[in-house]
Image 1 (cartoon, helix red, strand yellow):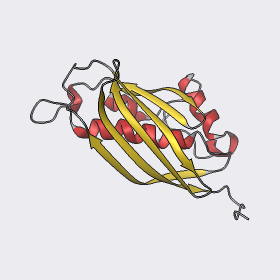
Image 2 (cartoon, helix red, strand yellow):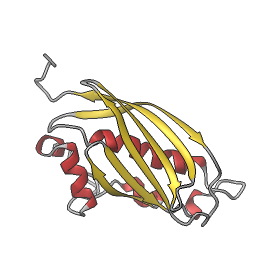
Image 3 (cartoon, helix red, strand yellow):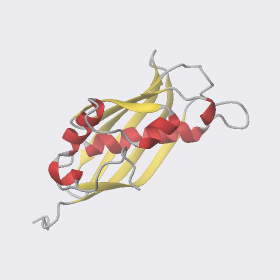
Length: 161
């Protein structure tokens, strides 16, 4: 049984990465299920940039009563990867190769109420892309920072020559 909130495997052949993510922001395509699970969403995109916003809830508590670092890492990974996704041409694919996260301060339930995570492409080459993202509250206070390397897979039949 297929999940209606998962894109069909051939969508990347008919839309650029930016077009795909813009359609998600506008509600014409479904967002990824992980956003529902962890209460965050893609808020805006532009060439080389992706902005997510979210509010971690009880599902993200760790045993000491703060928000698990995995929540911050997941929203960072989403912004880090999706900003690279905005650079893809029709038929190109990508995957994350490595990610580094620095936790600056703890996140407590409801404090802050909403967090914003902005990812930006630092460099996009033919086969590798590098990005960075920052997780902040509405006042701009930094909670986490991350960097990521993504591998780009050229469209079928393109040998890069």
